[in-house]
Image (cartoon, rainbow, N blue to C red):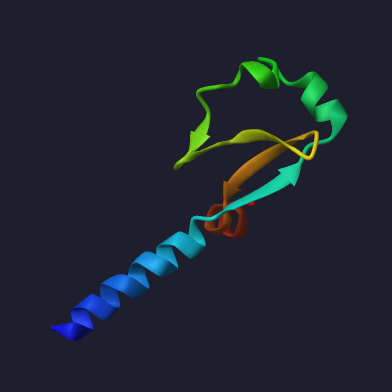
Length: 72
């Protein structure tokens, strides 16, 4: 029975690791050419975070680590 608890804990930690956000900055030209504008894209979400975020004063596209690794 204790192995089931250990396995569930490992699965939860591994899932959290694979789902952590990785954000890549977007070029200013990409942001300018987006239609609809990036600031209106409030419904685009990936799991529990927004796909487009402002980080360090720049727009970034954020995806889970596993999605970025497997699907670019």
